[in-house]
Length: 249
Image (cartoon, rainbow, N blue to C red):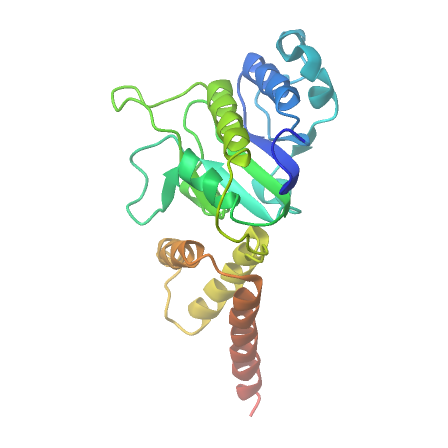
């Protein structure tokens, strides 16, 4: 596979694409870089139109076989590692992201990642803050501050090229076994944490999302392992059990 031995399956995910020409171009790029699968969340255009097919050329199979989802969480359900592209420079100060080169080099520090997802947002406004929090890492493609926005297919081409370039580098460090908590594990854990903190009165309904987002950013920055997130969930379950049973006594 052109993108390196430590990636078994790469999923390119487009969120609400609005232009069939862009979708066709991305399908062609999937063929150029031997991506495993194209996934599309709630498309806002006809992704099977003649325009899209003309742009796809030899990537037409990625259009024909693409998987369509109505929700981003569902589109990343089977992915070990999720990366998200962020073109905005006005993201929340608590958000954490690095350059595409740095993030892709980081992925090469692991022996093998079974399913890698790379998410790209809407042409006009990218990904929301809540969608960015579904990713393990968020990356930015450095551009001119006067005109930072990239065309969707251009952003995909740069990201796939840089990932391919990173995969061909020789790293001196000993490769680590990949054991990061998946995006789904972290998301599900924080649903439980938010519910518990609302129950005990630490959070208020109207401000809970903002406070939980800050905590979630901390967990993502810490490169939390599967074991660590399971310990955290175990603590939450035990506290919930105690609260539910203490009410009966």
